[in-house]
Image (cartoon, rainbow, N blue to C red; front, side):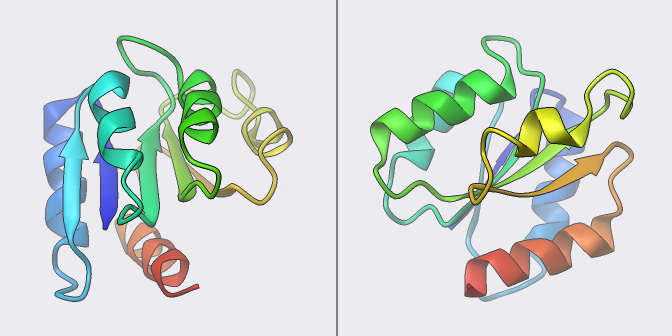
Length: 123
């Protein structure tokens, strides 16, 4: 299962629709970190497409809490509207090497995101 986490409904629905084109992938969604943590705690969750700025906690806090809940957490694909200057990839990837598979800037290259999700699901 792939979990799309974004508090902006239009972005979340677009990403879910894009990723659902692959019949081999079951896609679920969440609009808050609390809802996402419940779903991502399931061993069925293989990939989380995670907006780094959520209304309840930020993406880094989400990743920390997910690691506390699952000894073998899913791959994380981070998405953010922040510029590289404000939020460098190294801030996201550095402490979470091996867990964060990719960082995408909004607007997201949806074809590349689909490729990355498919790669992570099949790894």
